Image (tube, rainbow, N blue to C red; front, side, top):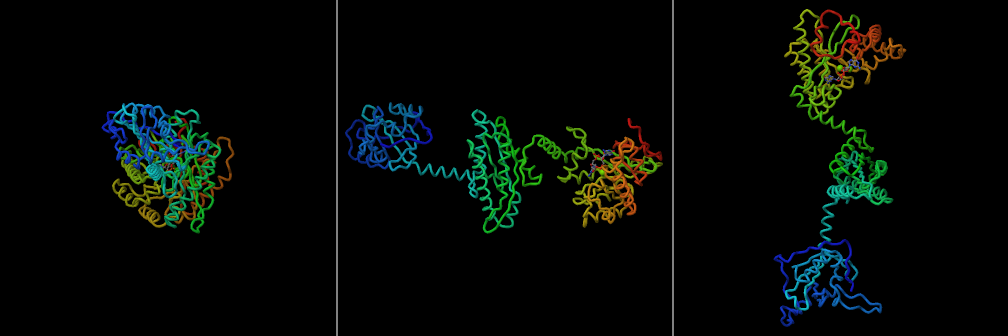
Length: 622
Ligand code: C2E
Ligand code: MG
Ligand code: MG
């Protein structure tokens, strides 16, 4: 006899006696104690289902042809076949004794206390192949006879195989044959669960989340078929890397395709960031080798987000979110690289996110205010204008300076609305001062304008409408644009600058010197003022004993002379000391702005400076 059980312990399906699925009709000669019916016997013997009658002691009393065929006796030492299944314990033939639940259920069936026992077993067919069998044992109606139960064995290999194939299909990606998202998450959740109670491993988990750079271009230019083949080739290399990484370890990383051109390698029981960094480096190098596909040589790179942490307290979603963020950093930092998750950078991102999402509502709730910083004539110290600087009085984060949110507002486009609000508020304020102080020299207001305002809104129409609405003279408005915003401006921005200038509005170049510093080019634009970046002025520290950098002074002096020759006036930013102011005045700079004169202040602090009185440097304590 060669019937054995092998493979994983199958689960037994124990049905209590109370079910409607009662014992079957007796197939043997001992039906209800009456004489054996020959037709029944013949039907039993030739039935395609393998069946055997079991005695109360669990041995096989009789078996049909199909059953005998399954359990042909193994050859004895003399080479002759042994005895057939009859007389052998059925539990040995189909492994009903190895797990306690099945064993007990089987005993209950034999005693007539249970209606049926069912289980699946992997048994060895006499021809050598392994097969999956469905085992059913049911009691026979008359326990007084020699047979207590009927055992049947049906071959369910085909069904099991189909099930396995279906599961494989459901869990794998057809293009690359890699595990798909579903299987990946199943494994990830399993790994997180296991490491939380299994203390034989490291208790850590790592993930490389990978996205191909520029894959879309391959798909778009060479077509999806080439794209698919490239993905399959990538998958092959990733699998190779995973196998190599796993060769010296207990577990091999799982490589999966999460969708599109995104892949992941899951490292269970990771030993630390170093292991993950090594793996990520190998992945990058491997993918950098060119691919030869359909006669084309294709080059590719990838960006990888790497996360490595304790499994305890980590959720699959949390890990994936961290990986996603890190991948985004890798892309933003220039692609073709791996980046490690950084909790601090993440906290910053969260604040950025929180700020970005509350920008538009903040505009409606009027959480923005303007402060004004004096622009002072260096020659006589009089106030000529003020720069309007926006602040966000955030209910949660307190007062925020523009560096925290202007960039975000530019990214999501809300700068257009915010910019319009700033422009209107500043113009209204400038007009208010003028109306309230008719005897004073009127001051101009200088408003910062972001590039996107020029591109995404009709700045000229906005300015025109706001000047009309507030009654401010166009000559009392200055717009500050950065050098990079006007560089290369042709078409719309240039037309806008020209139209504004034609209206009488002054255009200033903000932070001059930090960009291209192309004076010749700027002079051809309708620009009237250069605002020299604070970094230049920092070289002008006479009074604190440090030697001034003569090169800086020469550069600034030459710049100012050149600007004047081109018809531009010059304002110096960040004037903090009297020495700097004096030096700037001597080399011909027109106006200055900085803490020496005043910090940016609330609008009610400006009128005292308005009168013909010159603005004096306040004493430093003030
Ligand atoms: P900016 O236009 O160059 O403004 C000057 C910045 O230098 C201001 O910073 C001001 O507070 C600071 N500052 C002034 N004097 C001194 C000084 O003596 N020393 C030092 N170290 N700093 C000084 P703030 O207010 O934080 O503004 C930063 C930038 O935000 C501005 O630079 C401007 O580019 C932008 N910004 C401000 N308001 C607006 C706005 O309404 N719209 C747009 N698009 N951008 C704005
Ligand atoms: Mg400015
Ligand atoms: Mg500036």
